[in-house]
Length: 487
Image (spheres, rainbow, N blue to C red):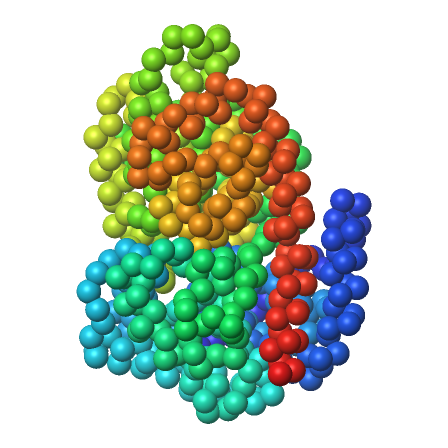
C-alpha cells in the first residue's frame, strides 16, 4: 500500500546562499517564487513515485520536496507498494517498451493487475489527500493512482514521465495505447525532452529537464582527506595509514576472477588514486549499454599504439574500466537488474586473462543512502573519464553529475544525453552505443588529446550551472504548478 516517505534533508537555503558561486542561482529562484507561491497557498503538493531509493527520480525527490518547503509550499512524498510481484515485471516491460524495446501487446490480465495495484494504493492515499491538493505522479508505475484520484476527488494532477524515445516504433505505439486512458486524465504532463511527448498529449505537456543538487552527498566538493577517507571506508582503496572515520558497515563489493564477490581491494588495489580510470555508474539495465562498452574497452586496450607519445601510451596501458551499479537486490522496482549483472559477470569471466585485471565490476550497497552517494561521488571524482553509453536514456543524471564535477564525459546519441552533451564542446558523443569499434575510436581520441578533454570538462561544468542545477528546475516547476492549479 502507499506510504509516506519522511524527508529530513540536512541543508536549507542559508547553506546554499553561504557559497558565493551558488548565490546568483538561488536569488533568481527566490525572486520568482515570491511572485508564484501565493497561487499555491493552502494547497498541499504530493510527489508520488514507485520507490524511495535507487534511480534518478528517488534521488531528486527529497531535495525537491525540501526546497519547495523552504519556499513555503506544503509538500509530501509518497511511494506506492504492493505484494503482487508480477506488477514490477509488468512495469519493467512498460519501461522497456517506452524505450522501444520489446514486442507483443498487453493482455486483459496485465491491465487488470496494473489497475488493481493502482486502486489498492489510491485507497490508502485517499486517507490523506483532499480535493484541493495537487498530485505530481512520477513515471508509469503509479499513473493509475493519479487518474483514479483525479476522477474521484477532482484533485489537480500532473504526470511527470522521466523516460521516452524520440522514435515511434511498434513497441512505443503499443505502450502509449496502453497508457493513454490514464495519461489523458491528468491536467498536465511533464517530459524531459520534446521528442518524448506522445501525440495524444500534444498541447497539454511541457518540458522540464531533471537537475542535480550541487551540495548533495553525491555532488558536493570532497577535499583530499575526505575523498581518501570515503574510499578507504568503502573498501575502494587500500588504507596505508589511519583515516579519521570508521569503515562503512556495508562496503562495496567487487567481482573476482573466480566468480565470487568480495571487498574491492581484498586482492589488489583498484587504483582509483593513481591509475587512469574510465567509469560508468548506472543501474544494471540492458538499456545502459554496459556490454558494448566492455567490448569497446577490450578493443581499445588491444589497438595499435604506434605514433602515440609516451604519456598517452602509458595512459592507455594503465587504463582501467570500472562498471559500477547498485546492489541489484536492493532496487525492488527493477527485477531485471540481477539478470543483467549476471550477464556482465559471464562476460567478465570470459575475458582474456591479460585484460581481465583492467576491468572492475563493482556493486555499491544501498543500506545507507548517504554512504552510497558518497561512494559514487568519490568514484566519479577519481575518474579520468566518465562514460554513459546508454542505448536509450530518459535524461541521464549520471552524466550531469560528472559534468558538474568538471570531468570529461562520453555519452551516446540517446536523446536524454543529447539534451546535455554538445559533441566536441561539453564532451563527446559516440555514433552508436551498440558499436564497440565506434565507441573505442571516440574513447581513444580523448585519451590521446588530454588538452581537449580538459577544455570540454570546463565547458561542461558551466553548462550544468546554467541549465541543470535544482534552482533552475524548481523555477520551471513552480511555473508549471501555478499555471496548472489556477486554470
